[in-house]
Length: 286
Image (spheres, rainbow, N blue to C red):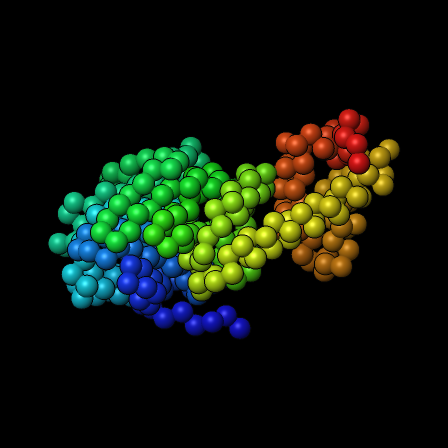
C-alpha cells in the first residue's frame, strides 16, 4: 500500500512539499509541488492541476504563514498535472506580482490557453535564491521538454516524472529516456524528490533499477530476433512471444511498450523494419 503523503510537509529548512490534492491512477497520491529556499523570495517547482481549491488553499496558507513571495515558478514538463494550476497560482494576490515562469521549450506541448508569459529554460541554467541554487538538467524521454532540477546545496534532485517515488514511469521516447537516466546516474544524487510519491533515499539504486528493468525487456527482444534471424515479426507476434506470461487482455498495452523498445533499437541500428515487420539488422553482430 502506498505511503500517505501529508498535504504539507517541511522536508528540510529549505524545502516545503505541497501535495497537489489530485490523486489518481497516473498521479498516485497526487502531484508533488515544492517551495525551495530559505528567504522571503523562493522558487516553486510545478503548480499541480487546474481547479483544485484544496491545493490552492494549502499553497496560500504556506505562503502567508512563512511570509514567502514567489521569485520563480519552474515547470518540469507540459503535462497538465504539473502546469495546469499555473493560472490559479499566478492569481494569488500579493505573492506573484514579480514572479517569472519558466519551462523548457518544445513543439509538442499542448495549448495552455493562458496569457501568462512563460520564459524558456536552458540546459545548465541556474536559479539562485537565499539558501538554494537550482541547476536545470534537460532529461527528455517522459516528454521532450522534461527537466529535473538539481539542488546544489544538498546534491538533491527534483525529478518531475523522470523518476517516481513508487513503480516506474511512462515515456514518449525510450532512447532519450535511457540517456536521461544515465545522465542522472552520473550526478550521483544524495536524495530524489519526485513529482509523485514519497522521497527516494536510495537514488542510485532506484535509477539503476529503472535502467535494468528496461534493459531486461530489450534483451528479450534481441534474443528473440537473434534466434530467428531469417524471420520478421509484427509487433503483435513479438508480444505473444515476449509477454507470454502476461494476460492477453494486457497485450495491447504491452504492444505500446514494445514499440518504444523497437524504436530505440531502430535508432541504434540494431533492428530494421520492413513491411511493418521487425527483424535483426544484418549488420548487427551478437
